[in-house]
Amino acid sequence: MQHDASAKDVDRVVSIINELGYEARPMPGAQRTAVGIVGNDGRVDASRIEALPGVAQVIHVTQPYKQVSREWRADNTVITIAPGVTVGGDTVVVIGGPCAVESEEQILSAARIVKAAGGTALRGGAFKPRSSPYSFQGMGKKGLELLARARDETGLPIVTEAMDSEKARMVADYADCIQIGARNMQNYSLLKTVGRMSKPVLLKRGMAATINDLLLSAEYILAEGNGNVILCERGVRSFDPAARNMLDLTAIPIVHRLSHLPIIADPSHGTGLRNKVTPMARAAVAAGADGVIVEVHPQPDRALSDGAQSLYPDQFTQLVGELRAVAAAIGREITPSRSGTA
Ligand code: PEP
Ligand code: MN
Picture 1: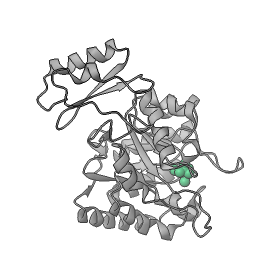
Picture 2: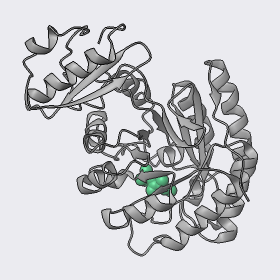
Picture 3: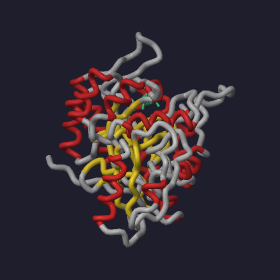
Picture 4: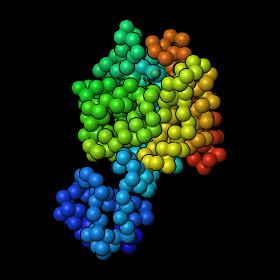
């Protein structure tokens, strides 16, 4: 719409779109309101819409992932994961915590470490997708309860994984942000399930997925009505065994150009080795990532999963300080966390 279009002009456009048999999604923006059209199969005849008062132009979305694209929405999407804690704005989030919740003592101590270091949110899986069925599978519901306890004490919002549709509701009851893991990026029934919720979703790139695949998976969630999607680059399988994965930091500026959704990086799974995590976390923020998610464990040598890539507490503290400096160099700052209630 033109920047001076009235609410009446917008309503008129919405009702014409409905008359044409489509669904209208008005999106007020900083400069002007855009009205998205969904439900069309193929190109919409724009002649009736173009001529309406207040309409500036009709843009045909050329990308297969429509609502995820920059054409659909020019302004960056800023997602609130907890009161006052946003992802995708001027600030950079630092999500820290162990790979998995292992015990009350372990997760509370990890949360205190993340909080004291100035981290923004706490990660930790209660349901773990492990390559081997004989590896530790996570604590399940008990793990979610422990995460909630850690949030009560520290105020840190919780990011934790849902592995299947049946448990997604339970995870959503505890989490501030539901993680969809790399192995589930193309689990379309799970994507639709979280798409019908309003909780923010952290969608990780599959290990053999293209950027186009990632954006199409995000589209599944938006198409169901949940626009709160944070993308995550976590490395892809490569020909080179020197690192666990190849962290594709080029994905950060590519996604920022193609989509309005925020994207963060996971240098822990992206490299698989502790001594590679700090340099790649710094590089991710320098590349414009809206945040990083980093594994840190009170005692990495005793971790039940991903110990080799988990930072020691003092390394995490040092990293947050360095990320603050990198962020400042590009005009951003680290998102502060809220205070605890306990
Ligand atoms: C994790 O975050 O611990 C995890 C299993 O990540 P990914 O799905 O990226 O492998
Ligand atoms: Mn892990």
